[in-house]
Image 1: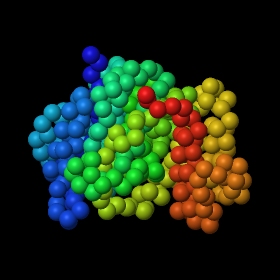
Image 2: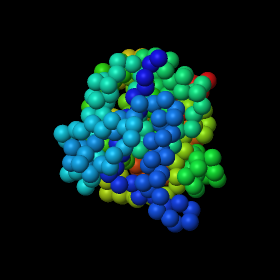
Image 3: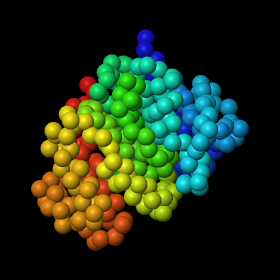
Image 4: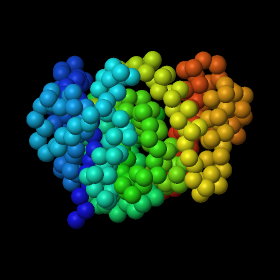
Length: 296
């Protein structure tokens, strides 16, 4: 039976409060780990070597240290996506999964078994739904619409992905990974609805980091090598043109794009925040256009 490594980056201390305001971070982290193990994953936490001594004992989780981290950029020792992908290739020559450390996995056995059958050229995406309690079945708040929380793909595809400075735990990594895949011809499927749960909490929003990495995102996308197969796609051509206009500060072209493809609202006030909101919408639109079916 194929083992599926599940790569996360567990923080030394996770703070979460339930609906009553009680601190449940440590209990919640244990519940997340238990859910991964119950589904059949083999969890690995990749952390900066500076964090490893502070990590508490995590039953069932193998901790792997990296030499570099994003402390200078993010003011936290986040691990780089490129380092995570390099470690993934060392762990398996088959399917690997990535998720955020605060995600509960609710998928049934059939969905998990389908992950084992992922072939090169395919990626399974997952979005979380919100919950107010540690019981992921209670009081759902709907599906998260601004990014992705889970990726499963074949490690053979890692060789075509680009090096980057995006970090797990920081903004934009969950957009850059699927966009990079899309521009390399990888196709997307989705987990069944309600496969992932997440205890809702107050956002710890770092606006400056979001802006810095968002600018970096535009530059990185425009420098990506695009496969001939992907470039033949009209969706990819429209996307690359729109991102180039963002880089050149061209809101009129973007407005025309969204009038033709009005899946998302567009704000064109000219501020950097509006520009990056437009970028986020472009990313999500691209993945939606290239998504062709659910996993089962």
